[in-house]
Amino acid sequence: MKNFLDHDFLLNNETSQKLYNNIAKDLPIHDFHCHLDPQEIWENKSFENMTQVWLAGDHYKWRAMRLNGVNEELITGDSSDWEKFEAWAQTVPNLIGNPLYHWTHMELKTFFRVDKRLSPETAREIWNECNEKLQQPDFKPRKFVERSKVQFIGTTDDPTSKLEYHKLLKSDQTFKTEIAPTFRPDGALFLEKPTFHEWIKKLEEVSGQEVTSIDGLLNAMQQRIDYFNEMGCRASDHGLTQLVFKNVSKDVARKVFEKRYNDEALTNEDIVNYQSFLLFELGKMYAEKKWVMQLHIGATRNNNTKMFRALGADAGFDSIGDASIAEDLSRFLDALDQNNSLPKTVLYNLNPRDNYVLATMTGNFYEAGIPAKIQFGSAWWFNDHIDGMEKQLKDLGNLGALSHFIGMLTDSRSLLSFVRHDYFRRILCNLIGEWVEEGKAPNDELLLQRMIRNIGYDNAESYFTNR
Image 1 (cartoon, one colour):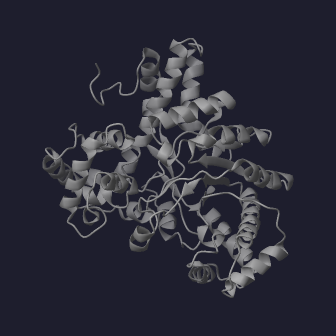
Image 2: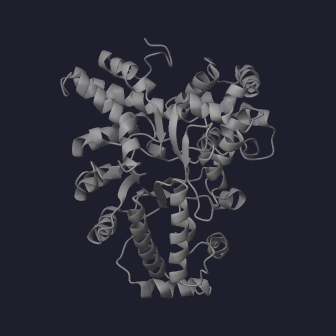
Image 3: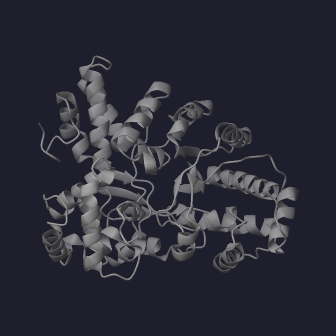
């Protein structure tokens, strides 16, 4: 019987242990998609307590606490930070089987050297010990990043952002980790949202462009893409409940924009036409900059209307959708490819049903000299656990070229989430080790080490830096 979270955690055979300890354990991190706040890193923010660094903004934990019957006052309400931490400590013992149970204890052990299980009985002791450490210089954002050996962080940023903290970090020679923005144009794409007019005004202010027509919008978006590129941007990101694509002329899109600009009612066809046109035009702009386009497909968001009105988006009330994606995704990628404007693209699905759809879609489009130009992205969100990661790796292995996979990302708002890379690497090494032990893969040390190094770091570093 193995001890919980021991040295060989998740490594169940000799080969996997060698691969992890000799190669994966000490690899740097290329975290190409997350939701960290660059201001916190620039200012090297001091956190008063564990709730501020660990629970604030973490809708994964919020969701788990609600499943445990915790009152909302103790989650997003006005309760004290200690009371919120105590509520999380009461929740954790009920999460065995959920990756949050592993991540919680990995974060305590990795960053705070706390090797105790969090529970109501240990809550006060862990709270005091970790809070005391948070007052020390080695427990601030920059040190969390440095200790995790993070070489690159790709944040997620609205086109209207001035990127002032990215600019400051870019000029800071004392901090070696590169922190680059990622272009997330939801405000432009989802014109049906009530915030569209407000967002357009912000875009006009920051771009210096008049946005009263579809041409004005495209000019403003190009200006922002140029600026993001100057700030080191390497990728865009799109969160799509469903990708519906049609070949649409500018005239059709112009009419839809004019209707929305004048507050006229839109049909579903209007929305699809406009979004299809804009997404296609953005794809061309990304290709010109040699950016990576990321498509996160399949989340059904803000299901709880009452809580959405109270808390807004990203509060833990999202789930997996089941809309069909294959045909429209194919048409979209093919339209860009026919125009010689298909950028490198990472496809993420929230519904594991669609693993084979995306894994096979990656082989439909290619460019000589770019291994796996279209990527099947790592197990995302509700798939971000042992079974989901293993399934994604196996499905990609069955249908694609696993050795060219770009690997893991945190997709997190927490500075402590870099342990998810270690979690993934252990799962990867264990899976490859199993294949070797079962005679499904050769026991070729150099071949296996190169594969682990590539998936663990090198592939992502190369893919996102145009090498």
